[in-house]
Each structure stands twice: as structure tokens, then as C-alpha cells.
Length: 273
Image (cartoon, rainbow, N blue to C red; front, side, top):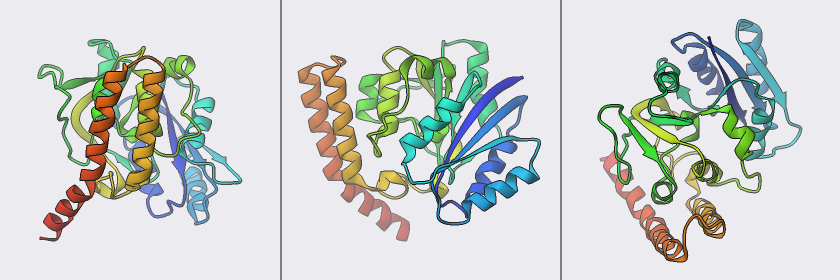
């Protein structure tokens, strides 16, 4: 049986957390989950709901950790990582849901050991893998690299499964970051480990909404841009990109930042139409 630690930050998610936990319970396959719910000082009924869920689902290994004050998603995920004991780590947020076959399809690549995989993401909300990533038609996988991620972060955190040894060697999320902290982590991991994405949508995030500029922390485009620029500087100062690449990625990011409001307006008009 494959054992997986699942880390779920919880903050004011009384309307969604039950469906999130149901999606873990309903995973198809021979898996043993260790579920960490880290309550980041919720002010609604989230805690009552998860305590009740734990009592009603005693066959699930649910561990609820309480924080007295709001610390933010990076601190919360790190608490989960520090407590995780299983060989694999999966991430999930309290307003997201896995498809029943999500774990089975991703873990199959770890088991087959070809290609060599240390971490794997998948698509969400019926999206597909696109530029600058290229999908191998035989495996339906696309490799993830530093420079590709600096063009486009394609690893939504609730889709990712990692080998625990990565955390032991790379460390934890940057707790000084509340935006783009996930891409910072994938960028650091990509230096020494093999990351891939499965070109199949197996997760619903934010109720199926577009994330960037619409829902969640990614809705704050200005703060997301600041987070990206911080990541870019870190990659430059760690000598993973040179100054020419830094300049080109900087310009590319600014173009994306200033064009996003127009793209969002276009999407909104199309949706309303």
C-alpha cells in the first residue's frame, strides 16, 4: 500500500472543506492517506466542521492542527511538511477537489519509474498544457524546467505530489512570501529534481474559476507580480540565470502584467456574452 501525507491549509472554508475532504476519501486505488488539516485561525465554523468530519470518518487518518493567529499559507504548509511522515507528499487547498482517479493516475508514474520522476503536477479546471511546455505523446507528460517556469508557472499547488526526500533536501516554503511562494518552491526544486506535469485535468480549484486575477491569492495581480520579481532576482543571484536572461524575463513579466487586465476584461465580456 502506498502511503501519502496530504497537507490542507484551512482558513474560513466552512462552505467547501467537506467536499475537499470527500475528494480525498473517494480516491480510487490502494492508498493510505495521512491528512493534515492546519487551521490558520479561522473565524467561521470551519473548525467545527472538520472536527465533526473527523469523528464521522474515523477510518481516515485525519490530524487537525490549530493555530492561534493567522500565519499565511507558507507557514501553514510548512507546519504540515514538518509533521508529515509518509514517503510522498500531496497538497490540497480547502476550496479545491481532486477527481477520484487523480492519485492513481499520478502515482502510476512513480511506480513505473519511467521517466524518472521526483514530483508530478496535473492540469486543473479543464485546462491543458501549452507553451512553452511540450507534451510527450507516449507518456502524456511534459517536463518542467526553470526557464519554462519563469515564462509560465504550470504547477498549481493542489495538483502536486512530491517525494518526501525532496523536502528533506530542499527545505520548506519561503515564509516571507504570501504570493508566488509556490512557484518559488518549484523553482528551487527544479535545480536538483525532475518535475513533470500530466496533461490531464484531475483537479477543480476555486470552484472551477480562472485563478489568476479572479480567485484566491492569485487574484491580487500586483502582489503576484512582486512575488514573481522576487523569484526572478533569487534565480539571478543564485546564478541559475545570467544577466541577459534576467533582463529578458523581467521585460516578459512586465508585458504579461500590464496585459492581464485586458485579458481578464476580455474573458469577463465573453462569459457575460
